[in-house]
Image (tube, rainbow, N blue to C red; front, side, top):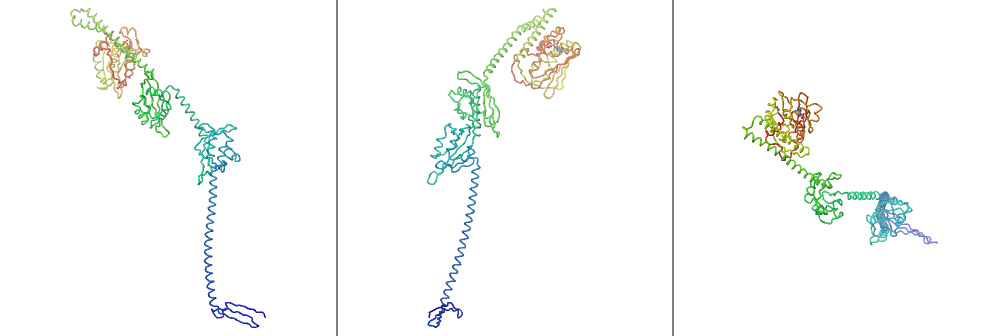
Length: 609
Ligand code: ADP
């Protein structure tokens, strides 16, 4: 019989107690072997429980780790996406910038090349493999010295020498078309200082360069023009006062005045004081102060310079401020006009004027001396020999006296008119009361008027009117007009003299009830030697130059004269003066008449019988 055995474990026969029952077949007997294994079972159960807990713990840990790992993986994924996105952006940026960007490897091949490069060099994608392919299409020159750029290429890509802001001229080998490209290159090194690759940037600067060339050409042209002008020109930077521009003519002046061999190029950029010449050294700073700070033009004339041949030259220098766009004075332009001829001419004219003045003085002296002698002889005759003077002799002597006065009047008028017409009459203004002066003259002239049976009336709207005019000339004018009025007014008629004062002006009117002046003659009444009615004039023995002198004297004092006249009714001479004459240069003039007013009246009225 076969021996068979069966084992039953953990059989809970009694509550909470466990047994292992072994059933065996032994020689046809069934043997039950029961063993209490409670302790063992409990121990095992505990172990299982422990293991279960440990497993649970490890599962939890695993779960935590895997969640963390998942999160990390997700982050990495996001970062990778972002990086991808950034790279895309970077690519977009690189491809869309106007500056060309090339990355060249150690062998000179392009490992990267953005779109702008193709546009700049005008080549297709397949054509651009390395830097030499550009050289195949273009002749490339360094604009600095117009040499081929080959050596710079070699140094940059073989010896890794950086290129900094180099402007190259690209000349298309086929079309000859030119473009200007600014190139920069920089080798990138690794940690062991070995070159990994070179970054090249390119910029099409054709437009700017062409502008620059045009500006240079223009500057060259302007310089040529400025230098061919025989006018000294200089431009100073303001406020640093350095020379910005100067032409040959001005340099020549600096050379002459400093005695130094200065060059145009040396002076550009030099400070004003650097030139160290006598030229304007004294007052240049004052002038610049006025021109620059006050933004005002300044003229310096005449400025005397002795040139290298020791000749005297005169210049009229103009200083003109120039403003920048912001409205600030940024430069001062100066130029000089050679006025040597003009100055010499003026000196000559002054000499002539002096000679003429002397001539007038001598002539008036020479003409008046014999007359004065005749006058004093007459006076002597009347004073000493009055008893011996018979009636007839008295008549003769009086005629001599009267004609002497007439001659003196004529000489005075001719001399003064000639002087006035030649522009040599000077105005000597002073303050005086025109009412009082007129009144005094009228009182004295009244004797003559009365002797002719004429009533002389004076009227004024003010008791006192102060004016700044040439008193002597005013007296001459009034006397002249009065003598004419008396001369041409018949007995029993009236002469009215008025002074009218308004705010700025004063007017003198001499109105008579005389024979009047024909309308057609009124126009040339002030012309030299104009005598209206020869027969009447002959009778009155006028010279015809009195009114032209009056007009000249009035004009010398910036006044205006008008005449109104009706034949047979009378005439009115109307003069208007500004109370303060513009000609206010006080100068001494030689007296052409006696200074005594009565003498003047006698002379002026000498032709009135
Ligand atoms: P003259 O020395 O001859 O008076 P004027 O130049 O003073 O010279 O005068 C020129 C002419 O104008 C006179 O000859 C005269 O014919 C005319 N004339 C001047 N004043 C008067 C006047 N008040 N009435 C009429 N005629 C006058």
